Image: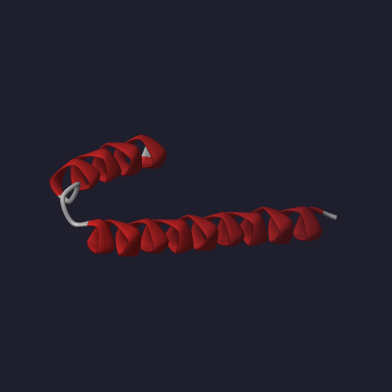
Length: 54
């Protein structure tokens, strides 16, 4: 559900800022960093669960 919302939001924002290349680049960078942080946090959560289960 979160991913779908993110995709919709991203598409909307991209369409809105399609004119400004610099802003688009910054937005892409922000999105990439956000995605990486989210992925790392989820991995950490799953890892902690696995270790605690053992």
